[in-house]
Image (tube, rainbow, N blue to C red; front, top):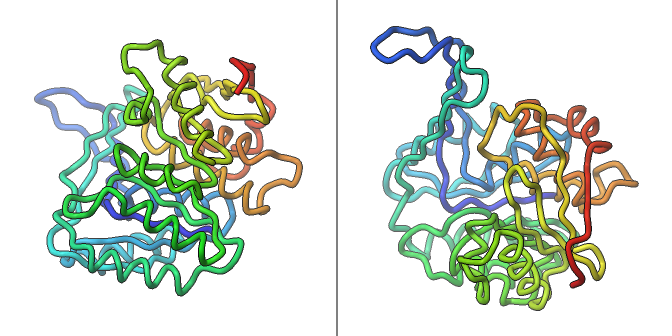
Length: 314
C-alpha cells in the first residue's frame, strides 16, 4: 500500500474560464475542487495511475467534512485530524483563450499546529503500516512543530517495516535525510538550496549534483533533484544522470513534482509495468501532468520519449 502524510493541507480550486480581459465579464467553463496539499496530491495521482493510496492529513476543524468529501470524489480514502483554523484555499486559473496556465496562487497555511495532533496522526499511521508499504512524507512543516517532525516519522515508519519517501523542504528535509533511513528524497532546485554544501551562487547543475551527492552520502537509495522543465538529476548506480521527458506544450505548471512522486511509488511498489524503472515511470507521470493529460495511458505513452545523459560519476 502507498500511504501519504500531509501536514499542510489545502483546497485546490481549478477554475477554467473562456477568457481573461481586464474590466470585462467572462464565463466560467469549469470549476473543480480537490482536497490537496502535497501528500493528498500524491494520493490522488496514484489513484489516477490505477493504484490504491491511503492518505493521512491535518485539516482545519471547520472544513473536515468538506475535505473528506472532496477526497472521496477523487477516490482517495483519507484519515483526517482536525486542528483549529481554516484550511487554505489555492487557485489555479486557466483560460481557453490563452491555452496555457494563466496563474496559480496559494493561501495561508494552517498553523500553529500542536505536536499532540501530529502524534495522533502518527499513531494511526503506524497502526496501519504493514511491511513493504511505502509512506510518503510531503510538503511543509506548519508553525508550531519541530524541524525533526519528518525525521521522527521516518524512523517510526521504517521500524514498522515500511519504506519512506520524502518530498520536503528546508531544515525538515535535511533532518529527515540525516536519519539514514530514507529510500527516496526529491527536493526541487530551490529546496535543494537548504542542503549543506550547496552553494546558491553555483550553476544550476552544480547545485543539483552537490545536493544529490550529499543525500547519497547519508544513505538515500534514490536521491533526486528536480529541475522543472529541464528534468531531474538522479543517481543511477555509480553515475549522476540528467533525465527528461519533453512536453510539446506545457499547460499545467503545478503539482508536477507530486505526479513524479506518485509515479515513483507506483513503480517501487511493483504495481507499475514490470520492466520499467520507478524513476522512468516517475518522469513520465510528471510529463503527463505538465502536458495537462495526467493518467495511466498518457504516462505509458511518454515512456519512449524519456531521454537520459550521464553528467558525472557519483
